[in-house]
Length: 423
Image (cartoon, rainbow, N blue to C red; front, side, top):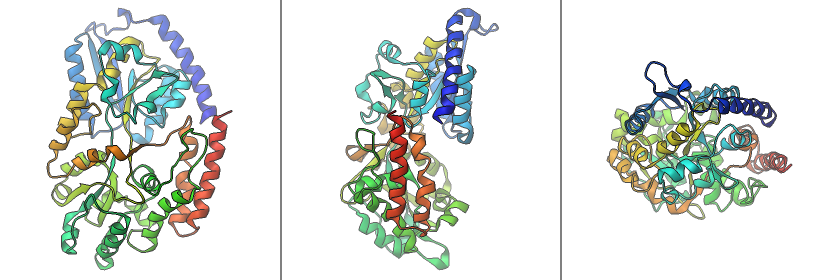
């Protein structure tokens, strides 16, 4: 990826030079309306209606600017964004993940937002403080989180009722999960107590920290996958498959875990606040599921992550693009997103609206876990090692390799990738 991005960076720099020559004059405004035209790239059709409302609010306060929301499917989003940014044909503003941002910063493909943040009066202290470093580099801020998510234990009340078992609660531990997953599994009905896919953010990243381990060292120079505690966090999942309490990986590959959960075939499902809107819109899950805090291992922990908005350096309207990017992550935008129930708004004081948008669920559980939240692990080139996780951990999930061996192989590969970052 880094080699490819080097070429991309050179193209992006050329595009930036050309756009800088053009400036922000009326020559780039729409000749029919005289308004500046901006594009905003996102990858979720589920969020599109809320994003359109946010854009409408921005346009109302900025009548000289029109913004078009562009939806690019997740499967194409990052390749499209990278290539279009390089060629100077990209959107003006786009969604960005903390795990993806470093190459864009290094390549000069996105612009710092510090001046626009200061001009807007946006308070950095209003955001979850764990997330801000994901979007900062060398003292500059390149994005602000527009939303955030933590991970909870979603469960099917109907299946618990049928098994005459009490619902999960905030006092649960791993032992409670294991015991109840076994009791809820009914092979004759094709029902499983839990789903154990090879899932990082919603799965083993959480249990690694709950076991007292870590994914990446605080200095970003070494992997934590080979630690005994981290291996315990991985074994939590492999044991659930081994015991028959979870479908095997072939089943989870044929029909993804969330689909099986929504179809009433999975009793417990570790996943994020980002599914609340989908579950609320579905007739079955809206009536039959609920959520609570993640069960504790050695300690309590949940992964926190979030999306940010970046302004592309190749924009023909860099100041307006920066202003839009900051607005899209600001208080008004956050409130709109929360009130629609679409996502959990990032700006302090707006989250309660999200909780109230789907009162059938105990959504407060996602907020109650914030004191124990650990940030999604990233490095300068996160993809270089995170892309190996599925490949190297799958044999352990399939029972083809001891989890200790798989974890240590991943740790070695990750250490090699991190060493490359230091060169």
